[in-house]
Length: 530
Image (cartoon, rainbow, N blue to C red):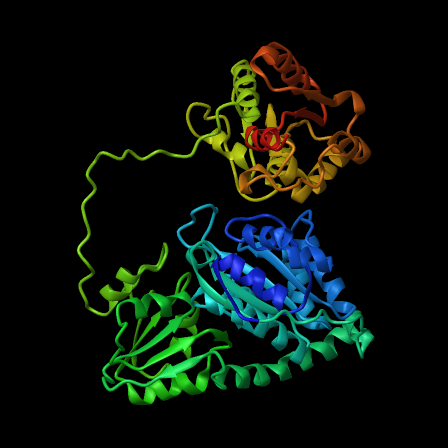
């Protein structure tokens, strides 16, 4: 029976996947994708059905586990933020070569304007690179409807499908009409299991098949099942609107628009409809949130002198989120009057929570490092990244998940001392373990601080893969047991912490310090439950 639910875009994806017969979701928490998995974890139907929804150690393990579920015929969903695609890329690209069995959909949630990210990369390039279909909804209802279509498309062509979201859609709510929940797929096995063994002999055959399938993917896109062409009487301009950009455009034209509009929700780009606009329109405007992905391809396709407006022409901003006002400016329409800031609200940058264990860790570390000349601290992705800001100013680099340990090792290889790495417990199990193994094998002269708050704090307190096992992991990798030190980061323990840090910096080799205290936010939630 159809129901109406008020859902975030992320939640609409989750509900749509459940209703599409999902058997498992695989993810590592990352804004703006986290709520997809959390919704499935809390959903009573998912619980009754036993849909797998435990967090994975990182995005690569998530992609690989989902591929295993697909191999035995079940439908699997993989969720990550855009930079997670970099971690999952090896498995993702090769999954296009092996193909899938049960439907496999990869949700990549992009973050234009970098609300909580270190870059603005556009995941559509990954779909094009892997030669797989891409689907991009423009609103929450489409997020629900299209995720089910994505599973169907995946099973029809035995190919993974990339499902692209952006922050504004993922984290805004709308009423969504749902449908009945279909049954899960039964266990079944690939009809050609040999294609999953990507030795060169097999891969060469599979690659030719994947290339041949591109024509079928184009036919799907040009069939206008979810791509839509709306004709208009004013042919001075044709508008190509991708994903959420269509929603922004139509905010200003609720009673209809005079220009022809091609609404793009599925890739590859529908060449037939684009050529139709080229023949009929004097110029084209390409609007899309993210990088000029579609615009670059359209310029290449129409290399015959027609004017193409968009990000590359400077008519739309190259950085930051697309907005309805951006689009009005590109159309030569004055945006709605905006009110000037009154000056009463002062900007407040993010800061570590009062009572956070990372604070006491940084306070001790800063005091000790004042005793050394040119000490360098290589940090990582997590709450503790805020140690760069006032009042600590404690770290010198943040690049990607796991880079703290390997950068500290590289600096030590060059003669840097002290060379300190700061990493969180969840980030350590995500991408730091291999760097620690490199450091142990080289007997690098570095001090690693795994600031353990017993959770994945930055994204809201999800389970951390290594909780309760960090010491065993480090010792098992080869760190000397006497140089795996644990402390409780509290003001009353400041002298003890400083002594430990000082001793391990002076030790010539790999040492690990684990300041351990539960995240203040999760501690409060646990106290309320009790």
